Length: 256
Image: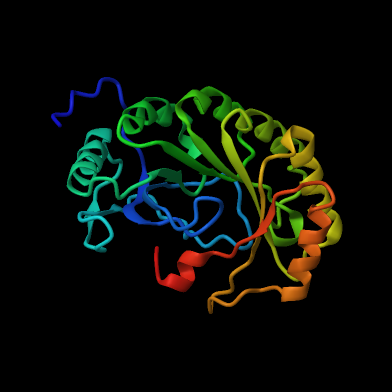
C-alpha cells in the first residue's frame, strides 16, 4: 500500500519498536506491534523499563519477532513507523492483533499521539498501556483508542501515594472503551489497598476486569506467596466478579 504524505506529524522520542507476545493483562498471548515511548511522569519502585538517556537511539526491529534490531536516530518520524507497520501488516497478514502504545508513560506525548494514532489505527486497533493518572491527556485522545490497560499504583509496590482520585477520574474516561485494570502486588501489599482498588473499579463500572499481577523479581521469581495472592483475590471479589491473578508471562517465555 502506498502511504500518503503525513502532514504536521511531529517526530517522537522512542525507546523500541518491535513485534512480540503480550505478556500481561487481558490480551495475554496475543501478538502485538509494540511502540515504546520514552519518559514517565512517575518513578515506580518495581519498574522494569530502564530510563533512556537523551540522545540514545530507538531500537527498531526489522523483521517481526526476529530480534534483528537496528539503531534509529531519535526523534523518529511517523513516516518511518508507518512504513514498518505497513510492511509487517502486508507480509505477515493476520499475525498482529493490535498496536500497543506503551512506555514509560506514552500519554506524556499526547500531542504527538493525537496525530500518530489515527494513522496507526488505519492498520490495526490501538491498545494503550498506561499508568492511569493523566486523565486530561486521555480525554483528548480517547476517540483514537480502542482498548486500554491501565494501572492503579498502590503505595506498597510502586512507592507512589495519593493517586487514588487521579486513577478514579482516569477510569471514568477509560471506561467508555474496552478497559482492564492492573494492580502490581507483593508481600508488603496490605489488604486495604486491594479493597480500595476494587472499590474504585466498582464505583465506575463493576464489569471491568481487575488483574492482580504479582511482582516479578530480577531472577524471574514471583515476589509474593501463593496464599497471599489468593487472599487478595478473595478481598477484591467482595466488590467485583471478574478478578484474575496473572503474572508477567512474557518473562517466563523469554519474550520482550
